Amino acid sequence: MAGMSTAHAQTDSDKIESADGGIGVSIGRILKLLARSELAKWRPVMVLAVLLTLGAAVLEVVFPLLLGYAINQLVADEAGLVTGAAAAALWLAIAFAIKFLAGGLPQLRDWLFSPVSQDAQRVVCVDAFGHAQSLSLGFHQTRRTGALNRVIERGASAIDYLIRFLAFNIGPTIVRLGLAAIALALAYDAWLAVIAVTTIVIYAVTTIMITEWRVRQRRKMNEADTRFRGIAVDILTNFETVKSFAAETRETGRFNDAMQNYNHRYVDAVRSMYVLNAAQALVMNLGFVAALVLSAWRVSQGSMQIGDLMAVFAMFSSLYAPLNILGWAWREIKQGAVDLEKLYGLLQMKPEVADRPNATTLTKPEGRVTFENVGFTHDARAIGVQDISFETPPGKKIAFVGTSGAGKSTLLKLLFRFYDVQSGRVLVDGKDVRDLTQESLRNALGLVPQDVVLFNETIKANIAYARPDADMDALRDAAKRAQLLDFIEGLPDGWDTRVGERGLKLSGGEKQRVGIARVILANPAVLVLDEATSALDSATEEAVQGALDEAAKGRTTLMVAHRLSTVQNADEIIVLKAGRIIERGPHEDLLALKGEYADMWARQAKRDALAVAAE
Ligand SMILES: Nc1ncnc2c1ncn2[C@@H]1O[C@H](COP(=O)(O)OP(=O)(O)O)[C@@H](O)[C@H]1O
Ligand SMILES: [Mg+2]
Image (cartoon, rainbow, N blue to C red; front, top):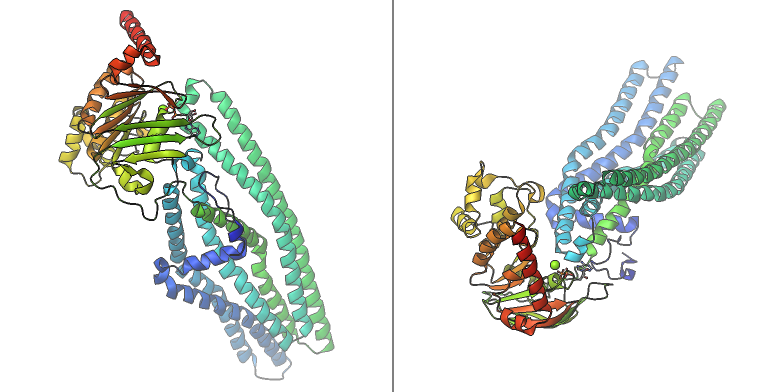
């Protein structure tokens, strides 16, 4: 693992980079993986697989020798010299039985080994998946879901390739070459051994050099592929936006460009394969010619028999056979190493937000929320939130208002510790959120965002997500308090109604109420509402507001609202502008101040009056 130490520390705000390792590092990783305790039950199978592979390599070398011997016997018999045709036939039969075994053992090995490979892939995928989830919100927001998935998928199949090609192809080929060289030298002529080793070394070097060049082309192709698929998924998931902007033609054009780019890269990659094939055929046939010319000369001299010539031919054929796929295997190995390093790059990313080693658990939270001089700016942004201080005693309600982009959502995210503050402190029950376990902190908080996003599951599963062990009574109670029970029970499929991808089969108001029911079920000490009703029309908003008031009962509530009428009963209202607090206090005080808040209030009142008049 040399080189690992030189890798700069990578946090999850970076893009996924490969861990910097070559094939050697990859082999090390796979050996380590196979040695893991989760895979211990497969150890006998692993040993057996190695033995079968070695056995097959030995038999492959024995076959040509026996074949040559049998043919020599046959020729000798015709000349009336020895043993008889029956013995020769027996030797031939044995030779081919061995050939059959040599071909069969690897099949048996693959048959035995495939569950091991699958299990090893599962272990790594589960690790990567779990780790990806621990990475921060920032990581996931800047990444295409499909791309992350592919890193994991490709990394997993790389494990399979690497084992298959290294342990079951290249490794045994080297063993066979060694054995064959010894056999050729001892039985026939040392020069044959030299020819075998030289051609195979030249073959391997040529193949690897050309393949190196091809790997670069293939990498470009993969990048184009990832981009192309990402764009396709992006367009399809945003179909509503695309349609509403009548941008279908534009998006189809973007798809076309991305696909064309991919096609070019693909053609480059494929063409380079033909170059490789030609070079390989040349080297291989030169080797054959040299070996056969030498053997024929020895036969003519009488120092080799015709059966020996056959044996040499069979030996070379059998040595060359697995080389056929060397280029491909090498490419897969290289690509596998790249993919595997990418996967390990993901696994090595440090979550920006992580539990401290001595993090404490927040037990029985009462819900006091305190911000002390909090400052935070998203990277490379000019303004973030600055110098924010407030405190909400348990059970009280605090509201944040201000124009879009003022930093309201950012404050709420800091409370959830989706990001860490850059200055100041965020406290829950007087404890710095950085000293708490993320799990216990977030269990104390319940969020209803502007757009509740649902799993493509039943309504029941979506509500129960907050507390998977909740019984039907608890679910019904939560739905009732979220004013959703009548709706659910009126559905033909009731609680088992599926909500569609991201909850598209429910209306905005229904989705919000599912989100509220979910939070009520979770029963957090602190309720956080981030424009929970802003996406709804005013009639729906009123209905949902009732559910929200119910959810807020007995809890500390932090709310961001667009409509000031929904915040006027808050204990404190904080007016934000460009990340700073410009006014604060209860509704009446703020109106009396005749400042920004009073202006906003007057504007909204005027708009409402106009709306009523228009009806
Ligand atoms: N993930 C992010 N990366 C970079 N900048 C962000 C991110 N999220 C929000 N911002 C920026 O931070 C500022 C405050 O955003 P936000 O808290 O969402 O505002 P509000 O909720 O008040 O509308 C905005 O300028 C916004 O563009
Ligand atoms: Mg916001």
